[in-house]
Amino acid sequence: MPDRTLRVVIVDDELLARQRIEDLLAKEPNVEIAGIARDGNEAVDVIRKLRPDLVFLDVQMPGRTGVEVAEMLGADAMPATIFTTAYEHFALKAFDVAAIDYLVKPFDDERFTQALARARKTIATQPAPKSEYLERIPVESRGQIRVVPVALIDYITASGPYAELHIGDRTFAIREKMQTLEEKLDPAVFFRIHRSAIVRLDRIDTLLHAAGGDYAVRLKDGTELSVSRSRREELEERVGLERG
Image 1 (cartoon, helix red, strand yellow):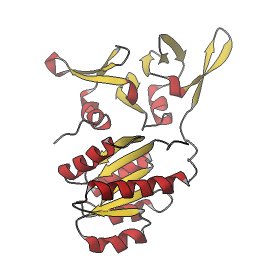
Image 2 (spheres, helix red, strand yellow):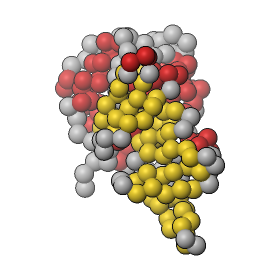
Image 3 (spheres, helix red, strand yellow):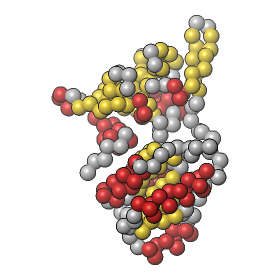
């Protein structure tokens, strides 16, 4: 049975350290970088929001240390964790908060691969958590109710009191607020790019910077949707564009 795709969050205050882990993960099959955090405070928020399978967590960071992040979230909410540190004496404390492994910087490719393999093995023995988010949406059409799997939705747009679910070349209208849908959809999969649009992140093909400072995304089917300026930076992070 093939490994399930691991959703990973990288937490480190150093850009080069984050990029090093990203580069190594890019060589691995069945890995998705779900998010990035640059300090301990941001790490708590990102882990709570995205609920990844695995976290690469730096020990020494501004705001909170990696150990403090793990202690604040608690054992029940903390994903599988590989600590990264420049100081080997932090290792014992890392295992006190249930780390799977730790990497002492600078670590080589082989040591990284060993730690990731250990994490995969541990995670594989754990049952997949039941999703708290919508998996199906009932749609009424011509007096009939049909159930639309959320996994098929490419994007959602607002249309007056309705939200329109776009699946391929088909559109389904439901009477639901965008804010409510945003809260009910998995934030690791969907992202609200504008007050009137939510997109499935893996459907994004290109980020566009139009004249006049406006922003948009082009989806893989060619659809273009506006991006709010206030959401642009987070969107870039979510689709893996690192800002230096």
